[in-house]
View 1 (cartoon, rainbow over the protein chains, first blue to last red):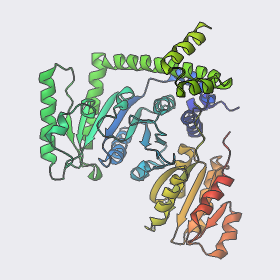
View 2 (view 1 turned 90 degrees about the vertical axis):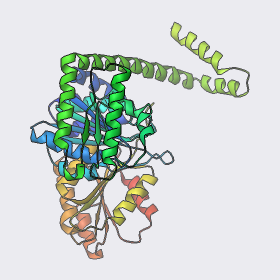
View 3 (view 1 turned 120 degrees about the vertical axis):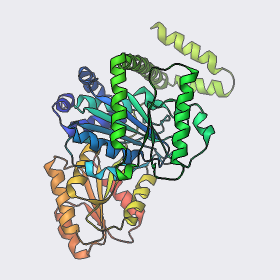
View 4 (view 1 turned 180 degrees about the vertical axis):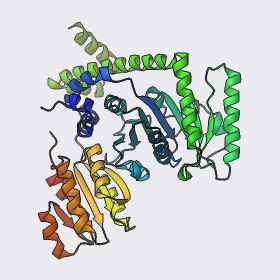
Length: 316
Length: 135
């Protein structure tokens, strides 16, 4: 068997690509390699780009990455697009806007389908970020699926989350709502040459000011105007992200965020592993089917069944 | 839970012609068949296509050409894939390809050529039957 962990650390894109596939497929062979890569993670800075469909996330990701490359930084990109709920297939089209990055050895791009996972990311996105981190990329950009109002998983992975907004999608009330508007470390008003951009800028700025009145915050999200297709405002975006990073590092918030992430992740892995083991044993001897039958016929309640199952397995 | 293995396919338009209707339609057809399709867009060089296949760990590369560049581009993609050690990646082509060119393309390592009017189910079937099993 090939030593993928070693090859990833030595910079083999092919090994990274295969390991990522295993992670997407939840292939247990990935575990051993991830275990060995773990000591080499935590070095990359992770930037999230999120926003509604058509807001310009891919184009911004392309321009932002290009700007980072000019500074000599290497970049990993994880671009997530939705899977069809009907066929399970997906058209992953984010690369269309990133063609010029395709042959740059300092850039590694991976497209991911959500495979039924909600929240704006794929289930394995966090693991893929770790592979690219160990692979040696300085900055990792995660582009989420086009989000609505409530897909906020990106904040669990990104050090800096950029919310991309475009003019013409709603009025002041939209910017007052909870959810996605709350997660921005940096607001980006893209397509800022379009009608309504100034109004949107004013609304977002006013929201940021309101936030400061409601509760004191250590960080005030900057609002950056861009016209990504024309490469306008990209330097401002780079600077906004850099100043957020500086804030996180100097205030100790980066360390705190990463610790919180490690905590959530550990709990989630325990959850996943425990679930897998219990499910495997329940299905192996047909007990699950018998339980389902009893619950469907109302001879048993699922509440009681859960308690019984847990009591039995946890004692062992 | 271990997920089902999904076929990952790159749909690419090498060369300079701007006719991507066919490629876009095929991308949708492959997705409809349950595959994960990376659509790269127009004007791809063989180097771009192969680098994409490498990073995406693609099982299949589907090339579409309507401008007559297939005799250079298709074999070049196969050659570069082999250079990168990706010799188990299935390469298929389509578009406007004269019949006389097909034997040479196949000799160069292109698995199959699908001309205009091929029933799309046939293409999907061919891919499913000939795609590598990933170990």
